[in-house]
Amino acid sequence: MKKKHQPKIDLYKLHQADYAARRKPSLVELKPATYLAVSGQGAPGGPLFVSRIGCLYGVAFTIKMTRKFAGLQDYAVCKLEGQWWSDSGPDFATAPKESWWWKLLIRTPEFVRGDELDTAIAVLLKRGKGEEVKLVRLESIKEGTCVQMLHVGPYEKEPETIAQMKAFAQSRDLEFQGRHHEIYLSDPRRVPAERLKTILRIPVSKLPALETPKTP
Image 1 (cartoon, rainbow, N blue to C red):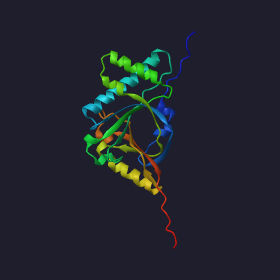
Image 2: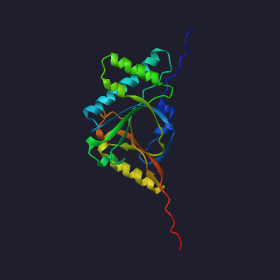
Image 3: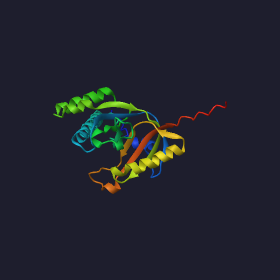
């Protein structure tokens, strides 16, 4: 008996509210999400950064295609995302780029299991891929309440957008609390810098209440 065809899952359509972003800041509430992740340190676009992106996509597509050929639920591989920070704190942009830490991410359906990741890594190693693929892992990330905004333009001008997001948060008695998160909607190899679209997301929490001075 022929298996019933299952429609391909598109996580961006399934979780539209998570990726709603305009050129004005807004608040979003995010539930925990599953990602394929790989970390590193150094300037974006550097050899290590590019190599780790290759590892991440290699694993992502190997898992997807293995499931597809096995007749399991198919899905679209999501766009690249990344969390950024530095040893001096979440305001990484003020630190030298060579000192930046990053975690590259590809959102993945919750039904993808750890043994599928292990199999994909083994397949890639057998094909002669580098040992770096072993660094890719499955991870659940919980960000909760976040300020989110669409940045259009070069990555170097993101601080201007972040300043708007910070002012928006402060106007609502909120403060940044967590890692800077970016979702890359454009491919910088094909899109001019002035037209790049990137969703910026930063978790926030309530500002601590000011203590009322006691009357003597």
